[in-house]
Length: 178
Image 1 (spheres, rainbow, N blue to C red):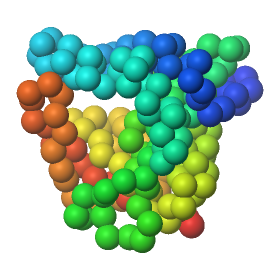
Image 2: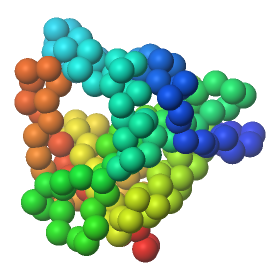
Image 3: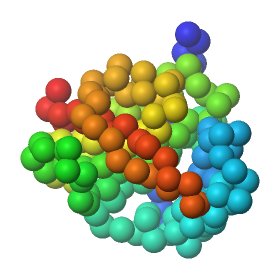
Image 4: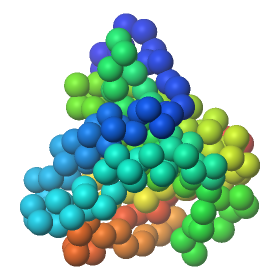
């Protein structure tokens, strides 16, 4: 594994970041899942989830934190953490969701994800969380293995829609005190 020469700069997104984040988020989602989804479903999901207006609302949400990982001033990854209702299999106190977590392919295996996860954990604690949970597509073994290395354990499943395609996500949970 090759490490980054220096850790990424990680900061909270601001309203001014909404457009760049929308483009980056749509591209990284399509890179990760485009080959495994029908083009019309992928297009519908990207339009509903990653427009500049959607990102602006999420950045402004007081119950959420959007983190940007930058290297040399360019986006290398991002994470979105939010308070909200957890699926029934998440039983721990004060659940906070890792809603999105993406690192651009050129930075895979170079340490960016570990630094971003540390910042996401801190943001979840800042939001009052004790239980940190996420949903990850059951057909994404690389991400599942990464989350397991970060202390998340598989507790169950739920459904996630990409357009009209109902998919199964594994629900993974970690204690923030760990």
